[in-house]
Image 1 (cartoon, rainbow, N blue to C red):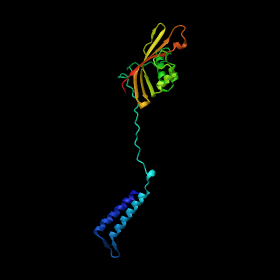
Image 2: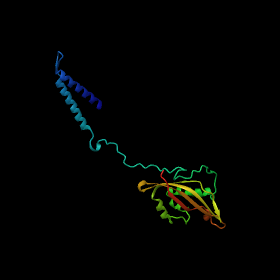
Image 3: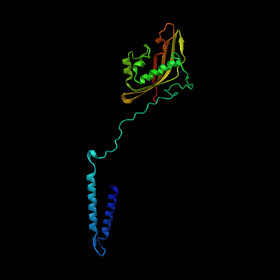
Length: 226
């Protein structure tokens, strides 16, 4: 009740000030001792304050100050833009949105996009199956999964594929990639730039598996942070 208390104090102070100038007032009927009235008013103010303090919550019931956020905010990943250091090539030619065949260059780029999407979803076994046995790196699914389990998030931007390099029944395509990820330890961001080369065999008698695009090499290097 802040407002009544304020008014009561003002009245009490006014009475005290008045008492200093005119100790006794006689209205013809009753003589009023203003000093005594002021002391009574002050006693009432003091009693109200003590009562208010007794009613105030203490200990666990007392209102708490707003908690201060101590957790460090993690900035979102910001991979460099195309055409900038660490970014994909700034190719102004839009990729065709027409349907493509699995054995085309766009089909190879789609394998790369699928590969990194599976890693980002934690589907390591499916991603591992898209690699050629000659790829440098983990040679088992478990080792592959352990390698990527270090990240809290893992993403890739995929650029336009090169033309198919064909010769003696062998086909290869190179696809530029940009990695942006975050390590669980220390929440450290990771930015990489490089390329993925895919291979497939196109000769008579080749199995359906050998005719599919498989990732043969992955070349990545550290890129400037976004």
